[in-house]
Image (cartoon, rainbow, N blue to C red):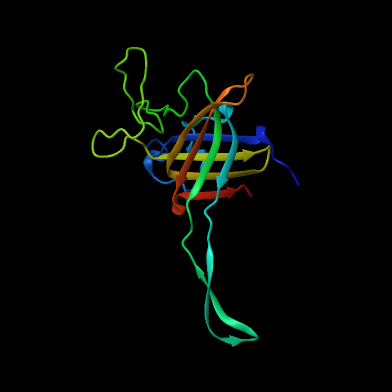
Length: 193
């Protein structure tokens, strides 16, 4: 049995509209990671990554009567929950989570404002045309060695948390937390055969 460690991971993010011409990468002929060739690789700035696979809760429903010495009951299958990715980024000199392909756009804040010459300003919750300026994104986490791999994808996800910017100690570095969520239909996990 092989154990994967941090050096085996690659995390890629991009606007969903820039990945595979905006069409789904789930259920296509290529591997999930093969569609992320132009995406921003954020692996070198990220740690403490968690991918929450959608949970499929069930609840017991009790009925009257007894069968085989147990009260009659059945399981009520609830809808699957959301997929989620969370992690910690090291705050760097460059803007992290920028779309690197067409019009540069921040994957949480949107386009931002370049009014102050030489700067980009961003405001959470900014609305310019009836919608929040927050793009849908695709996140792919690939864990691989020379011959095996596991890949997880969240497509049409939205970053829900970009913050708690903090320093981890007097001799540490500045960091911030990130969280993104997607519907169960926009999550996939694949193993290389």
